[in-house]
Length: 378
Image (cartoon, rainbow, N blue to C red):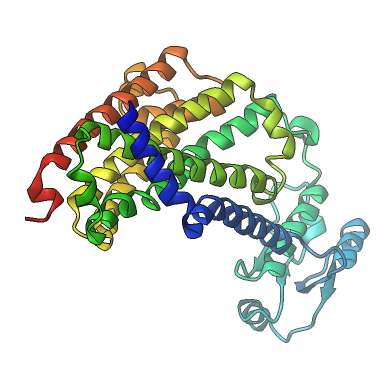
């Protein structure tokens, strides 16, 4: 135990004496918060129509109905063109927002056996044109006066707010969390082993009487602490930015939907996932000769890890046995916690499978530390 603590002290001392390494813990969370908040604000403002803007429109055969024509005049700014084709060309070029063509006998056709057709042309690549199309369609729908309505204009959605939010979070959080944790691990693992090999300091540690499994365990635990802090920093930044990024669908009250037990399970899953990822990255780092080579070899592993998180989006009701698959089970458990449907047995299986794999990887790393061919590049 004393040897493991010695390794931990060495790693912590090396880490906290390097300001760049310390900043690598908090900087991702700050950057994620700033970037996602800015993206959400920009997208929200870009999609918000200007209430005072009148959409430039060419209308063929303006209807005589006073209600409809008044509604159109309040919303649209009419433009004259010598032909419909030229007006359409102006819409395509972004010089005009809309072209609306009413049938010549529009009023007479309403209520008759033949259904009149109103053609509305717009430019999807132009925000004003797309917004104008939506508004005009709303006006025309109101004028149609159908013989029946659906839900009388109400939503009809009986799901609770927390269930709706949970469903949204369950689709995006596992993949994002796996990406953030893997990014945190890759920031520390290559430097800790491949970096020491490259600098020649690892050979000094290996000639000490410390047992190899103790060295491997100490390395993994210290790196897991750093990666967990980095992942939690990124997670907090992500949660704080969601209200802006999701444009009001997720609010600041979302945090109150989940209990202390839910957060404890999330934290336990994060730690177990970090142990697996950091152990796998450490083995790659031990195998590599330089930090650059380690980063190159770790890149394919990162893709696999992110895909594990992505898979949970397409698994609505996972079988219990899937929770026993390392990493994949954690992604499913993460998703189930978000939707308040987590199975206690599934949660336990996901934790145990991760810890078992992490233990095997630590044993493998200890054997690699015993190999002079691997450690000293012979």
